[in-house]
Length: 345
Length: 271
Image (cartoon, rainbow over all chains, first blue to last red; front, top):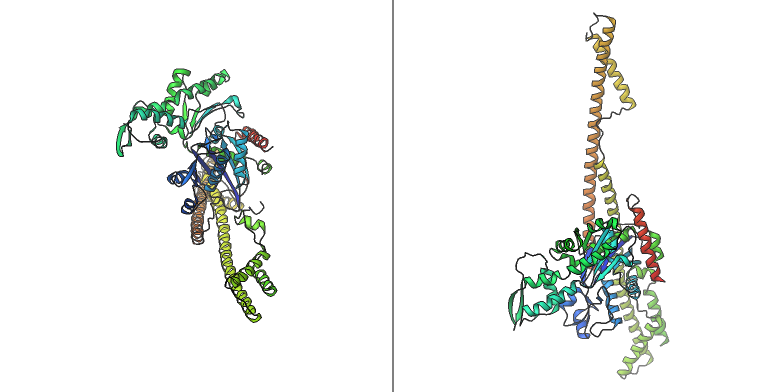
């Protein structure tokens, strides 16, 4: 790579079930929905003019492409509507390479990347992620997603990180040393779970309406909240082809709140098993990040349930939930010594 | 058709160029389809033969030589055209690379000037200290002598009383005069420093302004060239070299351990 003499581009990536975000040292920050679409046939390929489409573009052409959502509950899926694991692996590989291309790297720069992957990912999964990335970059490392969030915010001591994604809620206890398995809890009551809950509630509330899980997901992303008071939330779904409005305020609140109790239970578990002298400090430093943390009022709702069950606590919402993971991974990449990068080439 | 074979082979050699694998990689090529010289030669011969056979043509020696010549000329023309396009593309690529290099240097210089400006802005001027150069000291000494002479000659000290009083008055006057002179020098020095400081900031700001304009112009040229020739140059990183932990970071020790742990975990994954 001696011809890469221009500079060094660091990339931080948050590889998520629903969205993949990147932050790079050239100032580029991008996010793409974790969907990959391959043309269904020769005609579709000619019309699309590309081998694969990603994110919203893939979804918008879903009639011409086979859609893959290669990650589930934070890891590469083993099956998807009859798709083989190899197909999901390929989709994950293409998604990672597409995400790196979004950083607009120059050809003459060294590219070093840190990818935030779920702690639960299998060794095979992690190796696949590394292999996919290595095809297009010079050196790559993986790290746990919630750890990346904490590192990015310099909150490495006595902090509890909650990273709410679509597939999983990852909780990680930071106490000045590298968190191990006992310091991490992964829940599946995340964004996708809320979508399913809301979908079921809306089926009862909006009888006769025609909608699917994808529409519910998009609606939730725009309107999710957990506060007691709220403006009415109105959904418009077709009923026998006619757009019809439904007041779904209670359903959205109920579904969104279902995330809270499991999170507080997990917080309780991580706090109670910590050194009693520092439990109070840990309770007061709960960091809330990830795309799912954008649900309105979620930080306050967690605090309320913490007050009931754990005797209090303070939740700090990160400023840029969509990029907190990738920003942290970028910072890790920046700080990593040269010799480590070299050894992993 | 041995003669045609030789001619085609020579034409291909004349118009082709060698390129290293590294260069291809640098240009972003990851996979190439290679066609051997003999294959090209064979394809042309086969094509000529096939056309002749399909049209059920039999040629005598003279006609065959004529066809061979025409094929050869056409092939030369096509190769020349191809080479012209390649050269054109190469020239654009070089121009683009030069612009990119210039852009990188400008970025670097801008960063340096910004660091200097920041340092100059942060530099605090010491209004309480007095610095005198050797020449300044001589000047101050001369002025004190002149001032003492003026005091003595202008009757500023009353010598009609006792000697002790006279000396005391003289001492007070000299201290006053000296203080005034030094205070004046301090103020002058401070003003000079302040002026220099303001000038330096203004100069750096002007320089940064110019660099930004150059940078914007270069970026514009790059974008235009990229658009015209369909080149995606990418976006330059702000780092020219590998970074690493900031030693001044108070948590550097702890972070070093974390980074080592991450590295070890990743190393284990490679095994």
